[in-house]
Image (tube, rainbow, N blue to C red):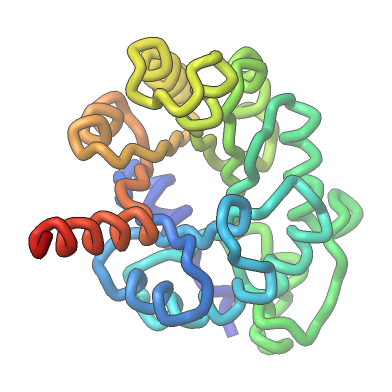
Length: 254
């Protein structure tokens, strides 16, 4: 059996822009619904949600029913144990939050690789290896892995080039919300200074040839970041959409 193709990674390499949605509601029903909604990618968020690692597997299985939609997983932290578990579940695209230095970037890469070049633990009977059916999985696994590092502080931005150029880093995702806090502008993601910092980071990464992603829930801002060269943009969050819809219906019947 062949190792499943990482369509998200392939599209990024081909220069195709990809529009995504954030999954923060646990279980498999919402991921399944999002997977069939026509987005290019769905991110399962284990950092800022109640989704535990054990819930990643059914979410991946739910999204995996839709071959045109890629699944990504944001880990709770840059922790090799979390990498090992989620990779064995078959996640091929991982996002690592709060990376601030090239050393932290290198540690993330190290956690995705089998020895001797890394520290990913080996296990044969996993979904990633299709329960032992993928030919030569251990030597082919990293070909289809996509590692996205999230830069979301002023320190991270100051080390942006060094982080992005670490071998094994496939893309960088700029986090406007935490960046706003780092800049002393907590939650002001549309503040001109925050917007300029995000825009400048996108431009820098495009210039050095590293794919860059960002979250932009305002469609006009998303369009602008795409015009600057962002490769993948998250334009919606499931819980935000739910709250907006519930509030709108309540206002209608007030």
